[in-house]
Amino acid sequence: MYNFTLFLHSWNRWLILIAGIIVIAAAIKGLSSKSDYTSFQKKWALVFLGSLHLQLLVGLIMYFFISPVTAQALSDFGSAMKDSVLRFWAVEHAFVNVVAIALAQTGSILVKRRSDSAGKHKRTLIWTGIAFILILAMIPMGMMGVDRPLFRF
Picture 1 (cartoon, rainbow, N blue to C red):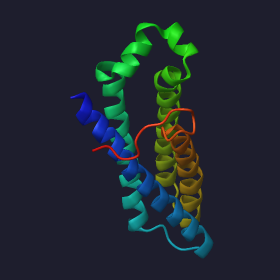
Picture 2: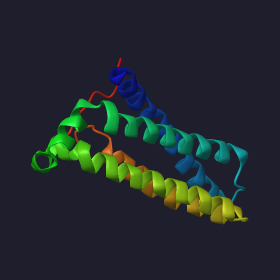
Picture 3: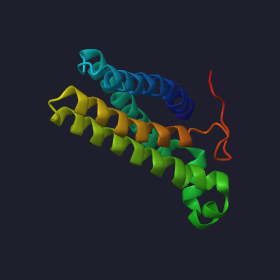
Picture 4: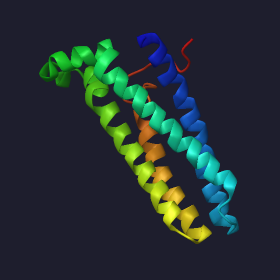
């Protein structure tokens, strides 16, 4: 079970990254060309948000039930805070990504409330952009001292 969820969590990040780039690029293009907010953008924003919610669900299952790393961290939280790798998994990775998902969801709600395309593009760019930067910072690619394979097979 752990290997499957880890595989899914690892590969879903690529969908998140691709969808996030498309959503941000479309918002920039829409702002610069003063074009309408299209169904293409709505669909990719939905893909981005849906993949974030799937990532959250899988991540929470791993965090609380099946990950040996977080089980170790949660068994002695004080010691885990002194170990940068355990602290990353037990606190930083989880907390910052939950904040990023909340920001992306908030942005989606604010975009839906706007009637003008320029406002939709601007809010999409701001909220998705901030969420995307936070997500990039928390992907374990060695930036925070934690490294994991880019592709799991």
